[in-house]
Image (cartoon, rainbow, N blue to C red; front, side, top):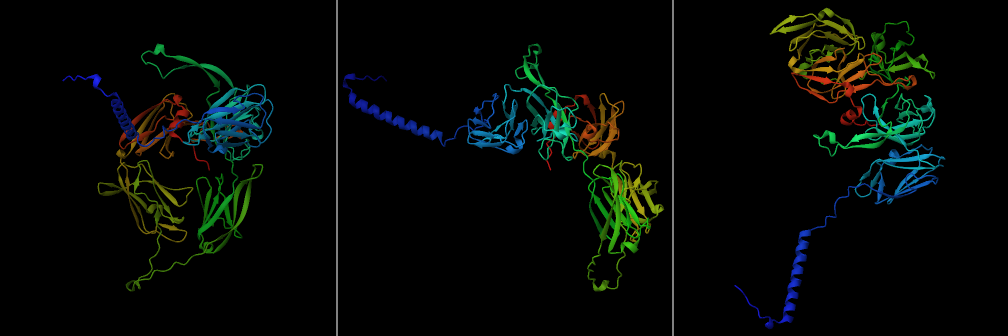
Length: 619
């Protein structure tokens, strides 16, 4: 349909009003619709950017600056997190500068005069964060010089704990111009830095020269290795900072099919950039007697703070001629020693005076024998008797019997059966101990070796080549064992089952380019050594009878050939023994065997530490 309009008959004034009304209505609808779509304001995108430096007084890398204040201004409000622990100034000062955040400004005030012609570097690590979201300004440092030039070289690397290659966090790393071995003990370093959470360090603003490199967990924060308990590390190599241009490959925008067209570029690198230091603690504690106790009337126990080379000796005061009065029992390293009195005439006394002799070191580390006279007390507490029922009034009290402790009912194929007495035996009939193997249901008497422990004199071990899956019975005749209290055993029967071969896993290891001083160890999830073997010339080793679970494998470079890992000793210039780990964990299942091919020459301490280790919590 076509409509014709007579323009002469249109009322233009009314049309204008009509169009104005329509326009207002459209505008209102548009506004309402827009408001309905917007909803609540979002406040914009979340701030994920760290603070940015906009200006500073002086400027970074300024020359001839000798005022006592540094002001660094950021583009937003800032806060400082753990600045006392994280901030480091190099070279070190006798009195730490005052570091404060004021709005969007960071103020550093020096509390002592600056050294002339010296480059200062202020390392804030990750202590600077923004006030709103806590975004961290990572690895921020600021430098200036009080002289005509800035020292610009750098020394970088990592510090790891020597005993398990954990990253050493929060440890100072020093450069000493004095190359004497005792400089770290007597002098403050010329430059220093602090390790981050993965053990990395970068010592900035180093001048050309030769240096000794040390790491120190500085307990008294005097920048000297003067406390024997402080962990430390050092490099055998004299450090000569330098720089070079290295060629790198752009691995971001490459086509793996066009190897010849890889984009290569050169970059300025400060060396050394991968120094390795291994932190350890010296065997420093002086030996002393910690405590003593007499929990049983015949049992005297003495606790020492550390291992002893010799077992202490004891005698009853005034009865020194009674040389066989005591039976001695000690821990593996003699730090706990127990003496059992085997004569009731003396152990029934409430109070005893004894003389204890043990080795000590004087102030010049010369050994001498210390004699302590100690009073030992024990008072029997009378136990309340239980009320008997009338029908039990005529029954005699049961005679206490000697019992066995720690007898396992399930034993590993490679394990041993052992049992322990509550008190040492004064009479032990070895012929009354029998072991039976069950062939079907018939017990057959079998041979075995029964050994008395030389350290724990109350423990006895049955050593035998077990049949996997076999069932055995330990039999001990009545009254075959009598202890120092006069107690004897009743008849004892204990059933024992040996695990099946199928209960275990086996790992075969093939080591490439083996060395004759390598000790190969299997570690469980707690880092305990469960098995170890000396590496043969072939490099092929089999670890059998491993219980299901997760394991790690490592090599100890056993320099002194003593079958264990050893710490270092700076006083004797002995580095801790090197550790090499297999690059991944191995999960073993029951009735499973696997082959591990291992090239220790490709081991990266840094990659291993980042993947499997965390910094240890400080005491």
